[in-house]
Image (tube, rainbow, N blue to C red; front, side, top):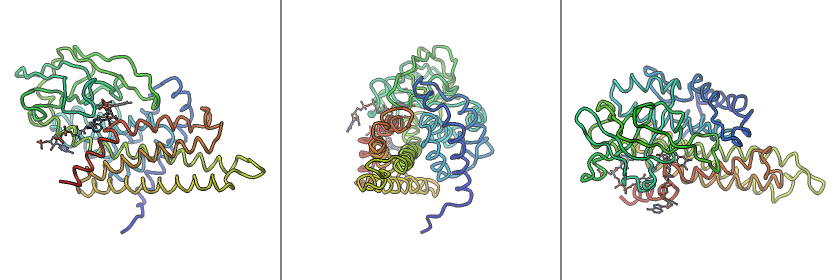
Length: 379
Ligand code: CAA
Ligand code: FAD
């Protein structure tokens, strides 16, 4: 067994670290406070190839493996989880879904621009009454022959007002249950498509979360992804990989908080010595580092499974379940190490603590990850 990263992996990691420190760190506190979408930074991430990392170069992507993606996600998330959720949705939900299941025409028309970051995408499954219970879709896509008539509301959509392309899951045939669901490519600006107000959130405040309303939106038949009735499997299959992205985001939030805690513990003095000399602080750092290492190994295992075409549903869910717990615990402890300074914005750890929470909720809550894992264990 070889745990060594290749030269290419190390180069991607270094490029992402450099980008995060020079381009994302300045202004991250203000963007969080004012809920400002990191538009310029996302544009640069596209130019550097971070928005379509795993897409085949013939469609404008970087042709990289999932391990590289995990490494880049960790570095970006250490600094700005609002930027990394844009990266995760675009890479592992939108680009991957289109590349794996889209038609050649759909790839030429949409994927090529999504992979370069010229435009960004959104993935629209959740609804006001269908979150964890994702088969209970109320949004309808009625088959009208040459097009679908789309009606309904999607909730909590990341990149809601900044995306140009939306992959929308909707029910065509209620009698068929989840086998009557379709995935449609909806373009921003289609008649009857409205974007609701931006959500005012606890964390990842720079990211752009909206509800979307569809009223008699005509979506051409050629915009359906896959066969009729494939929409729910499309969503589940795409989310299996998406969860590796969010696991890596959680890992990055945890390791970012840990690095800040180590730095602060060596600087801050109490009772005549650096607080890092107190065993209580040392033990906190030891626990953090051990948990982060375990989370990183789970993320890399899931990425390796995906790259080697093994089943990654369980390993991705385990990585997300564990890394998001570690993100929450580590950020709380990092605030503790900082004492009162941890409670104010300048020291970054309070933001990381707020950002950590969402990793236990989106792309399947921790309870849903346990359902996915236990079903795999028991089947
Ligand atoms: N790949 C392909 N097909 C899959 C699959 C997978 N990984 N997992 C399940 N399916 C298929 C099943 O085989 C089944 O099809 P058949 O009946 O034909 O065999 C079908 O999907 C339904 O599966 P279940 O019976 O398991 O469905 P369920 O109602 O019990 O729900 C669930 C399963 C795991 C709880 C699912 O509803 C789920 O994942 N819920 C969470 C939703 C979620 O993660 N939302 C995230 C939204 S996106 C987001 O959040 C983005 C962001 O924040 C940035
Ligand atoms: P519910 O499903 O109502 O769950 C409430 C609680 O009940 C949770 O603790 C849950 O774990 C628990 N629960 C539910 N069912 C069970 C069960 N069977 N067993 C045990 N416990 C259960 N969705 C998208 O489609 N696209 C996006 O881009 C997107 N981005 C998001 C961004 C943000 C900031 C947020 C907050 C959400 C986003 N979501 C997105 C939605 C997200 O995926 C859902 O919020 C999530 O799946 C949970 O659904 P819910 O909020 O309806 O909670």
